Image 1 (tube, rainbow, N blue to C red):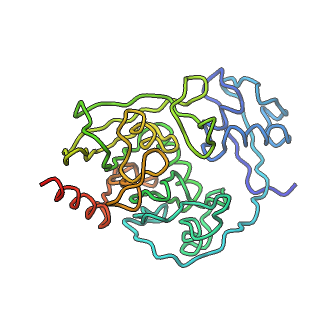
Image 2: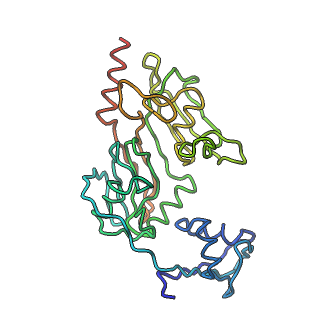
Length: 305
């Protein structure tokens, strides 16, 4: 079979399952994808085929024969983007509210991925349907997001996220006066069993570890303006955690209620700090509150005075 690329790796420790070990060494390859590759005979250990459950030993040589990538079905769209930073490896985009990050059922176009394909032709990052997407922001969350331009950068950045080396700071306005003023919300998050499009607090068996730090920047009447620091990266993590403690994000129609002062959830990806893949230099980027959220905060503040 013609291959897209041949990956050769050498184990430097003992004990991990082959499928898990591949995912840890190659974050672009999910554990499920690793299992499929192994079952299709595209992975060998010391030149021999193996099962997903085989345990890796120090010194083992693992070869992954990646099949050709499917052609992208993404349509390039000339969607204006605000680029905060760009080099040969990545873009930092200040995403506007209302822009979905990548295609999903019922939403095949007008996404950040469509804009990226238009701008970069086809980022060489492995996933043709989510080109360059290292992490995500909800459709109605504005702010900073990183887009990788090549597989090397994607691998490096995905590793930083997985090891929790990327610092993310969000700004949120929530209902009620949050106390104490500084704290941590720690509760597993899993898919809501009654509403599959939602996430929910779950037990340790059905949910994944999730931890979010917060700090009250100021109280505005019966609202709290918060700085949020998610330490893990679960879907809807900040929104679910805040709703769970009785302080849903203002305007969050899924985990709270609609707001009269803002048409979308008051959540903004304010700061990002990470290492540049090419140099290892630590960089930090900021995006200030967009006008719609500033106006909403000012209206609430004015109504209190």
